[in-house]
Length: 114
Length: 118
Image (cartoon, rainbow over all chains, first blue to last red; front, side, top):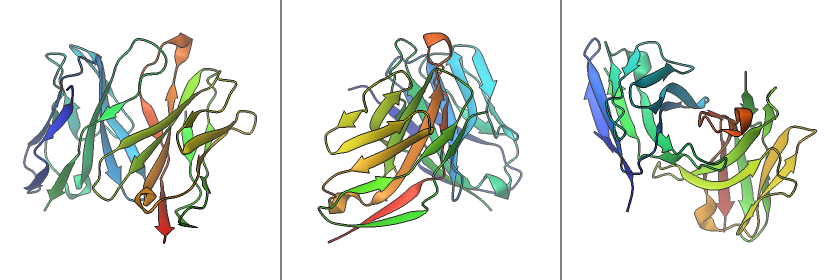
């Protein structure tokens, strides 16, 4: 069965360190997204990609970067982790054909920055 | 810019009763999609129901229905015959659908925590 996975599921790091969160999907979807979830804010879009070598900034992109070298993966990098980036991170993917294209979510990564 | 508002931080319902979770949205787009997701305590995001802005009938999926009132820009989720397993966080979300092609980005509301009492 197709799926979307994230690793690690839990991560504790220190302020100033570079951190990369992995996202891998086997749906063969062109669209991939990174969101962060914080209390009182719901999910907010960090970065997104509509295909290989395409990346775009979302609502809360400062301090984050992504790259898309293949269809399956969209890693999220925190260049220099800050305590404000402690959050739960969700990766998601969706197809581009048709109007009704449910966005499939990964299980999430809980990141703590000390 | 798109905006989704969920004004109910928490809701309580008795088992087997119906409950309505409110969602209002703001957009200048003519073509858009509205979604509801459920997030149980385990943390995963579960898709519940979808409504397109041009759909004339309200969407239904089993015990879930979406009360879509386009002129009022509301997309309330109705859960009938509540079950204990419905206790979770519920998110309303909107997607822009410019030119009939989905771009996929979702804008989420703040969420509503639903608690079902036995």
